[in-house]
Amino acid sequence: MRPGTFDLLILGFVFLGLQAWWIIPIINKNNKLNKRGNDLRVEIKQLEKLYKK
Image (cartoon, rainbow, N blue to C red; front, side):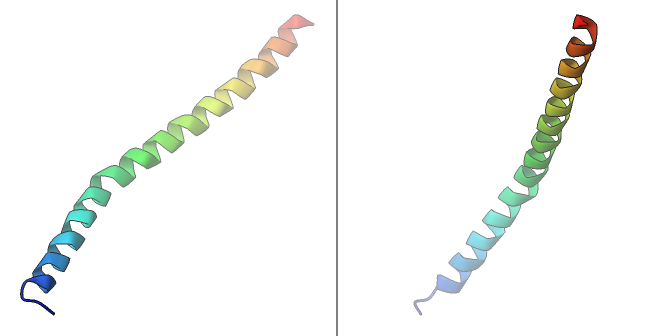
């Protein structure tokens, strides 16, 4: 291996780790919001059916 290859690999892993550290919570929060939005849509449809009768 050439000199510096190991340092470059460590730098890459640190960079990827830091990127994952802030982006994974954002993705999880987005998924929770989408799930809640879908639940609300289902509830709205049920209420619309109830009040149409």
